[in-house]
Amino acid sequence: EYVLAQMRWGSKMRATLIIKVLSVHLVVSLCSGFFPNDLLNVVARKINPLWASNQNDGSNTRNERYIVRLNKVFKATHSRRGADELIASGRVTVNGLPINSKGGSYVIPFKDVIRLDGKVVTGWEDMNVSDQEDEATERFEYIKYYKPLGVTCTTDLKIKRNIIDEITIHGGFQPRHRIFPVGRLDKDTTGLILLTSDGRLPNASLRVSQKQPKTYIIGLDHKINDQDLQKLRDGIVITTMAQRDNTAAKVLTARTKPCTVERLSTNIVSMKLMEGRNRLIRKMFEALHYNVIMLKRVKLSGISLDDLKHSGDWKRLNKKEMKIFEGILKQYIQ
Image 1: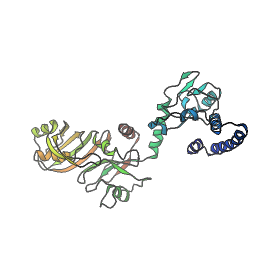
Image 2: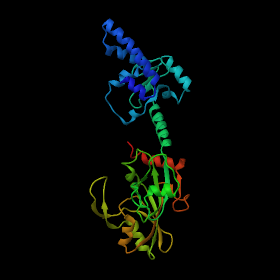
Image 3: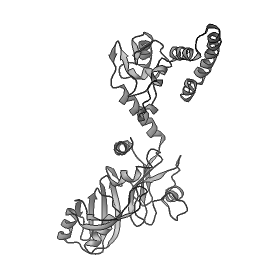
Image 4: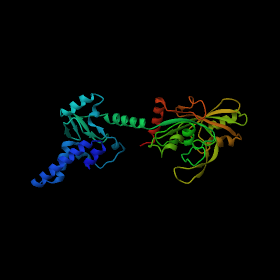
């Protein structure tokens, strides 16, 4: 198991060396009467002192997937060479075991306890996990897309005018991996939608979209009066179909939550809301005897449609937008 672990970490040369060392010690054990398992622990501890301590702990946290080289624990205060020299000096212990080999030792954030001169080293876990999550982010693709009218937010390529064909074949985007939309917009709704290849998202993608502030521009079939604008702000009782995950759809009759509504012209308004109920905006206006003839989403949380000028345009999220998006994802990726 230890050899396989080393191979998973990319240390194939180390794994080969371990096999050779164990072969020699196995012969010695047969001649001297020692138990091979004891020798395995001796050899493993000699090569990587963290092995024995980690094997005795059956805990399984989400951070065990982040394996950090020991010298990175000290990157906030030491250069890599300085950290190697510090470890080689024998001043560092991991789970109470002294370490004096500057290379080859790995630790698990939020699980292993690192001490320098007997004092616990703090803060290294968040720093290293954050760095690895940033590296993961760079491997994925995050796109904002101006969804055209009539496009369906589905990854089913059999459906005519599906969003994947629209952004790739017609929009010219060439993803490195399979992408999917984050949440959805109705077929008759245009505007901002996010797409990503981030595999951490499939089960949370709809919730991410639903629970964030969204801003829409709505065109109506006739002038809207001030009294109706206030009713929209306060909330209106409507009936929608509610569905969570793979459960059966249920009828939900309830008052909408308070939202921000501003008049842009006689029959055009902007609306900022948090809810994500099915066809929510259209049903709110229908309840007041207005027909929605144009519905466009222009903002999702702090990510805007402003720099996408034409229907069908797309752009990769910039650093500011990625910071907003990652902040949203941290609520759902645990």
